[in-house]
Length: 426
Image 1 (cartoon, rainbow, N blue to C red):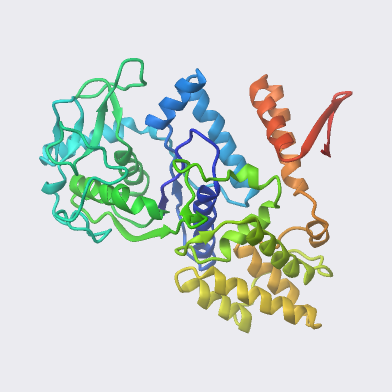
Image 2: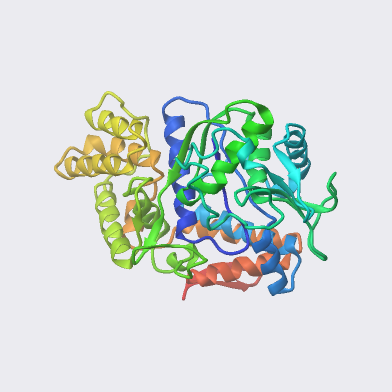
């Protein structure tokens, strides 16, 4: 499974969090179903937005991307998202990208434009548009399709960009430059998973043109079918508009976590089907908090660890049926509530089943009393303190200061005294 990850020039917003959580649950369920899963989620660490932000900040591109990769990892960890098996960075696969572009040139699917860029010739690839259901005659240059007079067709897209002065660049057969955005994922996925693999995921906004372009590049270069199944999670909306940085209506994960527990945010995401729109508001998050509290209340008298699941039990059967039906987490969550009702009615023997099924969704694994008292996940705080101490030992004081600020932003104050570090709430 390959999932398009983050372009690391800013903090993750709730739309990014949805991608992280949705495909974390997909992997968890595939594994729980007995499948071996190799999960790749890439990092785009070079593109126009990154270069522009680094210039605005007067800092090297590498420093900018490293900072926001750490921030992304922290946000994901707080949301209970497990690390992927591979997390390739675009800058480490430039040779693979240039090799793929050369193959496309050899097959006359790519050409060098008068601008010095190398473009993909869309009309030479049969079947372009089949993923999004668009025909070439209907298509227009969309939001993320760069219009360039040097292109043979407005729909042609850049594979290799000639670098401007003082921009990061790599040597190539076409001169110094850098890869286009679309070729990154084709090269990295084929390198790590092979020319043909099972699942490719990402946000709904990537279906066209990004994923459409990936199909054209990959199948054009290899001659093989690229992906068996495409999965796209729906948008997060605020006041009926898509949440995005370009619209300026986004809320970062760390802003939200100042007010709401991270598990509440994860639960909020999973109460909606991954393909449906997700409407953000404090009211909806408060409702998610109350609902999750009801589940934890059913576990108050259960002190055991998650046990193996009895898949012959009726609730587990319903849970499995829901998850096998296109990862229908709303129905799976409804099963958890039915179990909680039975537990609260005196069937305490079902408590281990409730906790174990919740664990598949990355829920209900904390101490119930601590959650219900509204405390921050102390384990996460301890982990961040350990990371800060490790940074101090290696004399990476900038990273240590970033972690202190991150905790402070979350309402946690660190105090260093007599060689020891303690924490308290603001």
